[in-house]
Length: 276
Ligand SMILES: Cc1cc2nc3c(=O)[nH]c(=O)nc-3n(C[C@H](O)[C@H](O)[C@H](O)COP(=O)(O)OP(=O)(O)OC[C@H]3O[C@@H](n4cnc5c(N)ncnc54)[C@H](O)[C@@H]3O)c2cc1C
Ligand code: FES
Image (cartoon, rainbow, N blue to C red; front, side, top):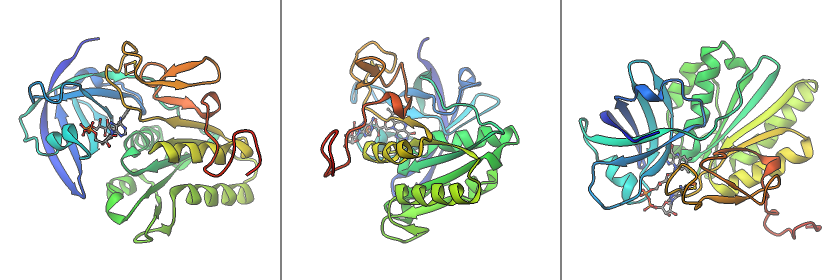
C-alpha cells in the first residue's frame, strides 16, 4: 500500500475546534469498514514530519471521504485552517474495523468526544443495511459544544442518548454513566436481547467501558486512539499489553480490539486483583 494524493473539497467548521474535512480523490478508500483509519499528512513541508492517524467518518461513491477532527496540536490546527483545494497525502484504509451489525444483536455505540467518527460510520453502515434499529448511539462530551453532527445522526434514524459533564445538554455526567443506565434499561425491558458494546474515545473512558461490560458478560469492542508514527506495524511504537500475546499493535492488530484481549488497568482507587 502506498500514500496517495487527495484534495480538500470542503472544510466545515463546527465550533469549539471541531471541523469536518471533505476529501476528494479517495477512490481507494471505497469499501472501508467502520473503525478503519488513515494516516494523513497535509501539504505542510517537513514540520510536523509524521502523518496523523484519522478515523473515517463517512465514505461515499465518486471518491469522496469525510473525516471529523478536533484541533488539539500542530497537525490538526494546520488541517483546521486548510483551504479547499489543498493537497493531502493519505495511506489507507488501515487497521481492522468493528463487527458487522446484525439482526440478532443490539449494538450500544459509545462515543466520547472526537472518538465519535468510527461509531457514526458504523451507524451509517447499519442504516444502509436496514439495521439502524439494531444500534443505539450513546454520545458524551464535556459540554454541549463537544457534541457535534447531531442532526446528521438523527438523519440516519438514530435518537442519540447524550451526556455532558456540565449538564448543558442530555444527562449530566460521564458517558459511562449513561451506558450503565442503558444497559440496565435493556436488561430489564428485553432480558433475552444480545447486547454488544462498541466504543471509541479517550483511553480512560475506554477502560471504564470495559470494566462496565465485563461483569455483564457483554461482548465489548474498543477502538483505541494511541499515538502512531507509521500506522502499518513497522515502528512498533503503538504496542499495547494484551492477553493473547504479550503485545498487540494498535495500528496493525487494531485499532479495534475485543476488550477481553486487552490488559485493562484497575479503576482509579482499586488495586490490581484486589478489593477497592
Ligand atoms: C486510529 C486513530 C484514529 C483517530 N481518529 C481521529 C479522528 O477521527 N479525529 C481526530 O480529531 N483525532 C483522531 N485521532 C487522534 C489524532 O490522531 C490526534 O489528535 C492527532 O494525531 C494530534 O495531532 P496534532 O499534531 O494536532 O497534535 P500533537 O501536537 O501531536 O499533540 C497535541 C495533543 O494531542 C495529543 N495526541 C497526539 N496524538 C494523539 C492520539 N493519537 N490520540 C490522542 N491524543 C493524541 C498529545 O498528547 C497532545 O496533548 C485518532 C487517533 C488514532 C490512533
Ligand atoms: S504506529 Fe508504527 S507500529 Fe503501530
